[in-house]
Image (cartoon, helix red, strand yellow):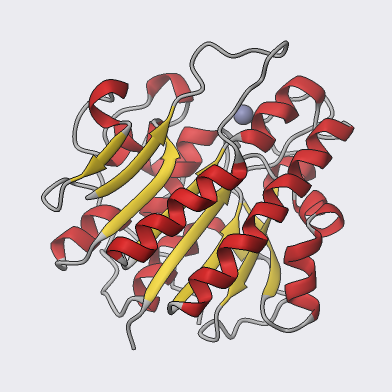
Amino acid sequence: MSGKVCLVVVDGLRNDTARTDCGYLMSAVEAKQAQVWTMLACLPTISAPLYETIHTGMAPADHGLLSNESIRPSPHPNLFSALKAAGKITGVVAHSFFHTLYGGSSFDAFDHVEINDPNAAIPYARHYTMTGYNQANPTMPSEFDLCAQAWAIARDHAPEYLLLHTSSCDTLGHYYTGEGREYRIQATHVDNALSQLIPRLRSTGYDVLVTADHGMNADGQHAGDEQCLGEVPFIAFSERLKVETDVILDQRTIAPTILAMLALQAPKTMNIPAMQ
Ligand SMILES: [Zn+2]
């Protein structure tokens, strides 16, 4: 059975913070509209390497992207290329890193902030950069704006795979640490915006998965293997995933699982089985 999947990556959202501060998501779990698991991120717990892990099903040691500074176009089979090859549509609302990885060219904000091109590697894209902001003014894309953009793409183009990636928890985690009130409050802002998006997506036939690339530590950093960095939430609004919720999930299962949900074959490089 094929369908449509929206993956929400809340950059830098700790597993414990999701469970204590994301009241909407936890209310959905309580109401049995969703299930929550603990997922183990791969090492190093750094964003670009783990965006690539989430989309290729490969550990950073295997896909070779080990730092944000060495970001490059993905040379591996990934969710975007697999859907393209199958004649399916993809869409993203995400940081410009995702264009660099999967968009088919180097990122130029003036060319790529908005893409509406059925022939493009990612046909429908809304990108942001956060260029020029700092702790004194950490202005970031509004969570509501990002959710509204994701909804507009879903409503108008119904991509089989829709990625929503938000950076604000990561940004405030770096400035105020993963134990600061600003970080936790931002998690509630993200959660609150998702409460407006997810029911809309569900009403139009989307399965929705919410996770994080990595967590955030008390130093306001991430890269290593502390529990608060490696453990991330995985929340599924879907009737298709039957794994017991006390199982610790492997981050490399996300890509093959999404392909299975779309009734597509996983490439050989995604060698961790899909969640059943
Ligand atoms: Zn970060």
